[in-house]
Image (cartoon, rainbow, N blue to C red; front, side, top):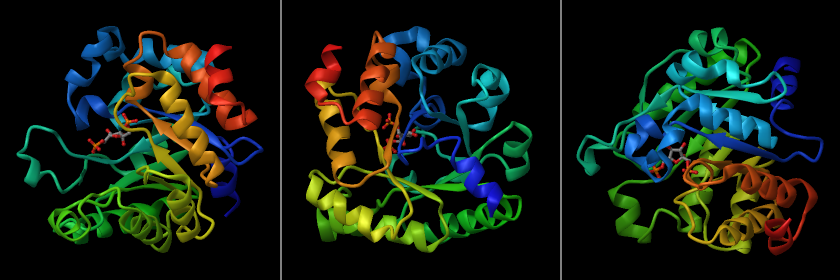
Length: 272
Ligand code: FBP
């Protein structure tokens, strides 16, 4: 619908690419994720910095949007994620994301897009699939785009493929996300441009964005990774730790934006 297309444009620039800041870590990993740079546990402080640096969009859970959503200026896309899990459960019981908010909440909070995670391959895949279907069906009715964090994981994947980042697994997740009606997909890096290009192909035209991952010691390494994503046909990145765990996120965000939107060489972008 027109509503879905218009709202998607709040994230993507005319080049069809976006840099989105992710901040659901206080729930999904726990506040220890902020200990590298503790002032960023305050959502207002970090949001102010990322917005000032020119970020295209931000992603958060409903509660943080209630607390600090007014830091997200109208020209920045707001993505509200409705599912999560805590890190307090044993690892093998963390293969399910549950719903902690509803489409109505996201709409009331001023969301431009609604997100939910599916752990493809999890023993509880069925629950997340259904959860995603319900969210997507309702959000689409209201003209809101839906983002799927398509994260394959589970014991069978480990057994059969060795790692969840195997491109055959990641492209399966991306395809499943597209087939289940996602308007935007966020997934893992597969390790190479060539394999990530296959993930993009499998998504059949639905934009695929990189899920940032753990902070790289050398900032240039992360810029190079994002460069490869763009070269592979990816539509940008959703980045959390690589932004908020850095002492100085603003110049780093500006460098990321230059790589994504101006095809600037990562080494050059890091220097500027
Ligand atoms: P990062 O850029 O920090 O990896 O954030 C992206 C993200 O998907 C977050 O939204 C989420 O909290 C986290 O990664 C989940 O990571 P994992 O489940 O791999 O520990």
